[in-house]
Image 1 (cartoon, rainbow, N blue to C red):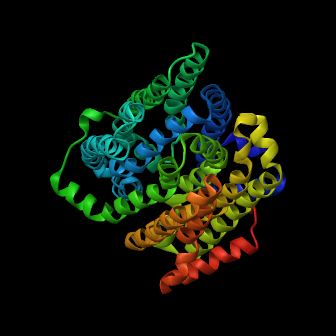
Image 2: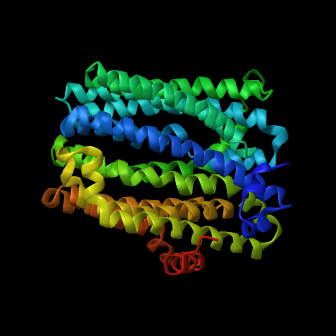
Length: 444
């Protein structure tokens, strides 16, 4: 494969990648994912800030509450199958039609169940809040449209994420224009929830088109009951981990919305939005190197651990690059982006931005657990993080509001991503590698 971009690299980097076709392929794939996220970070941040300013903290808090409810139940729709599907298609490409067809069927059924659970939970938690119920019912369609991300997994297995970028960015740009039009038209809150579902629907159509463009046909997919049971037997720990993960990722906003005011939640959500902008970095990198990590384990254990250490070092370094300047500039950033109505989000952002460092390493650690097929261990790690988050939110939110929720999130991220590794002997080597990355992070 000819990668013309290599000639534009500095000499010391060019020497490292010249002649290494697999590395070039990974870097190209990572570049596409980074481009996707950079576009979303730029356009999405601008449009998101515009919407937050228009709605104000209270209405923005209601929209964030609905989004968090859908996010918690999205793990059910995904079924914990993402990494398993990529792994199986890499290992057995001749069976990809059966794998994709079976997974798509499972996800459609699971997404419908997730939708009903999300709406039901909202009616239970907020029986008298008609607006929140409608927002969740409208935004919940993202769960059903998300089942088409099965096609995304096929592109991941081929390290061809540019086609996913084409599909999802087109949907994102169209939906962003719609959101901007809604602000100009002074549309009601429900319209913004519908715009979110529109993006996922358009992305599903785009993925189908890109799949067909690559000479593939969904009509050739086949459903195999035996394969379905096998995939579910492999994925149930990841399903539970995904549920628990989404709980500890979003329970802060749900608990804050239940225990405080929508205004406080809106302010907190603005800080979360800034902190989470950077989550694409570890996801993009790990998505690109995951297939090679699997191959390295099968051929050379020393190389396998060497690649993991480099991955930890890089992600810790990038986490510090983001967290340190944001700590000192949080007040300016919040005021510049969201205005004085959200000024109290600054101390929340200072705390939340440090969760990015732990989140970065957790993504890489999870890739290691997947390569080792230690899915049950991942479940335990995530459960401990979620338990810590719920307990800390229960203790801190009533007294400190959004600041307490932010502190709870940082601590729980550390527990799930790093601290809990010391409790399980086979993971202490991994814990040591992550500690070295904390102490001596490196770019290369």
